[in-house]
Image (cartoon, rainbow, N blue to C red; front, side, top):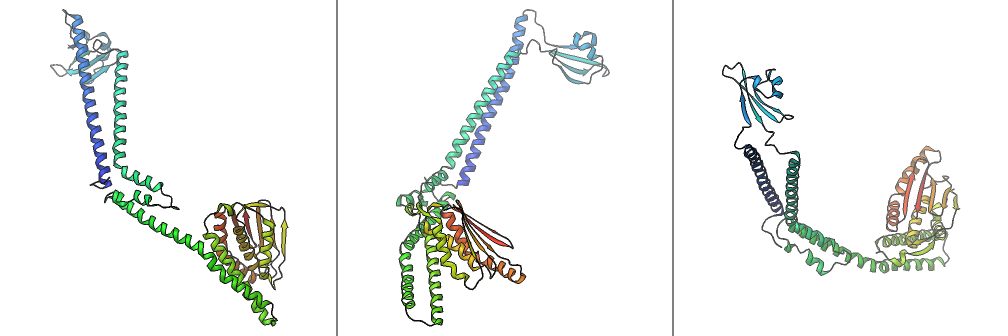
Length: 411
């Protein structure tokens, strides 16, 4: 539905109309209440006069002296009350004190309302009727306001429902039709629909690119690494000098790091697979493999490794992602532990894996280097582990001080 005016104008107009209608209704209600009160007083007075016929008595009388006043007023009148109006609710009398002819004495005009005021039961019924009318008008006003406002913001609600029904993983042509900006006019809602439509197209294009990348990158990136690994294995079978063997060993480690990096980012980029995410695997073998793969980092370092197996847990999840997380933590612990700063303690418990490594050996210079290395080493690796844990519903925490670093991976 297209509108000629903007949403702001429509809402303001609807609010003004609602207030105007309610004001008119309340005005008529108050006028009717005043007229009802007047008619009620006149009816009561006329009824009192009819009951006294033919001896018509007046409820309004004047008194020039105090002795002529009704008994309840005589003692009060002797206190020289101020000029003006006075009310005595208990005696149902209204008194006006006015100056007499010589302006020194007081005259009294007494209005006896005992016969024209309704009894308490009638007052309660009248109050109940007024309360009912006021409540009804309030409910009608509330309903009118809700109806007017709902009609005014109907385009926003329609757009919100259309956006909520979109599945970003499977965007169809019907989804684009539901949020077509031309359906909402040129007002604020139309601008919002156009922005959502544009961003939806970008998101859909990004999802398609991600699907294409994750489906093809695995083969395209792993094939060169596999070729390099095979070539290195063939070279290792030849008689090499010590220098060549050292270079070959460095190439192997670099290739392993490249493979690990590729596996890491492919794991983070892949879409959820229920079959892989629910695979059952043991923790201890993965931790042992990670230690062996990263042991070369401790070459020429006098650092001991202590593995404490308090349990042999078996968990459900994606084993490759778990192996990547453990390899990152073990690599950081091995790489950024200085010579003589040991031991590195790896604890395997029923619900968690903990890795302790020292970052201070008492020497100020090495301690400063260790702190700097630890801070740098737990940067990218920490971010990768956190993302893996978040994606696989694991918990990760890192506690650091000047003495040691404690990495905890829970499941």
